[in-house]
Length: 148
Image (cartoon, rainbow, N blue to C red; front, side, top):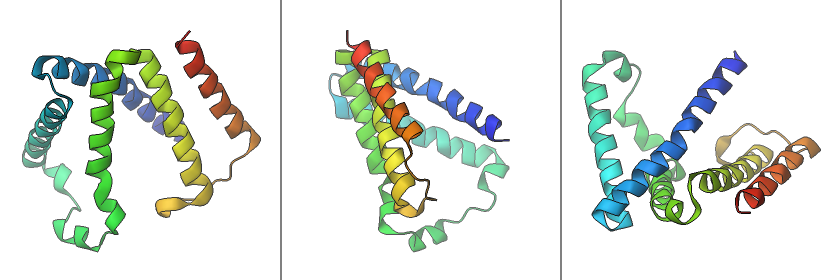
């Protein structure tokens, strides 16, 4: 079962450079990174509203009321998404897709290691070990190689 979920994650990961390219192209047309980011979120919100309206299973078990009980930091997902999308809009044109993706993956992995190790934000703890550090080191080398 874990293999299935890793394949789902990898498949979603394939979409990250595609999203970056799309966002970067929109920025080229609208001329300003935050306008491109606003369009990204606006289209996403409209599409999500359509999904919630047309697919009854998408609403199962959900309740807006329970969101009031969430910790303050659980409300920051949209802001974090804004930072990510704006970074794609700005950075990709300077680095290219592959370098941006590897650098982003490196940062993502370092952040994930910290979350795992310290159990921050309510995550299950998984200690940093030599093989995990080696993986990060290899990603750092990959970023360097992409820039050569």
